[in-house]
Image 1 (tube, helix red, strand yellow):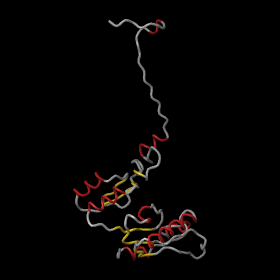
Image 2 (cartoon, rainbow, N blue to C red; image 1 turned 30 degrees about the vertical axis):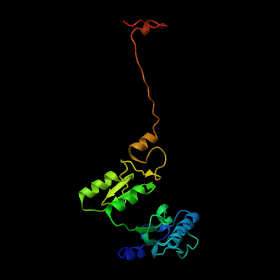
Image 3 (spheres, rainbow, N blue to C red; image 1 turned 90 degrees about the vertical axis):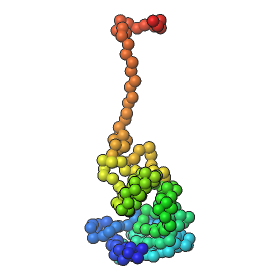
Image 4 (tube, helix red, strand yellow; image 1 turned 60 degrees about the vertical axis):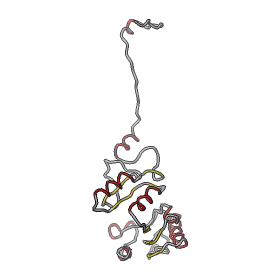
Length: 201
């Protein structure tokens, strides 16, 4: 957390027209902004430690824009709204656990399952994590495990939408109308139709 604070405070927020001069832009709607700031407030009310507060962020010339400043929480617990809800905003929550197994259970028990990652130099731990975790995309020493476009992209549990995932083979299945033909051919039909069952030899 101590190392994150100076990095977060240096993030540049601005309009999408600024291009590479900003790290991120506004959220999609005013309702989204209100929801994000409401979850930040509920996190404080429920006992999490708000280390960096992004509420009330305003940008000169864009006072009516849907900007939310970067926020950082520490000591978030699984019963809090800002843990249970997918925030979809510039909010990072630190959840502390006492062991690897306890951390893994947090991911397994979470109702969402889009992406997760583990950082480790232990191959056995990485293999165990990838095998046991019930999430659609898993990163090992890789922060955002969104695969290349020829692999399937998609989550599990409440992070799934529809019957298929995006990209990869599932994208072809989505745009493909399949047809299954089951056929059996008999000899002699060309002589004309037969309307009785032949005795079995």
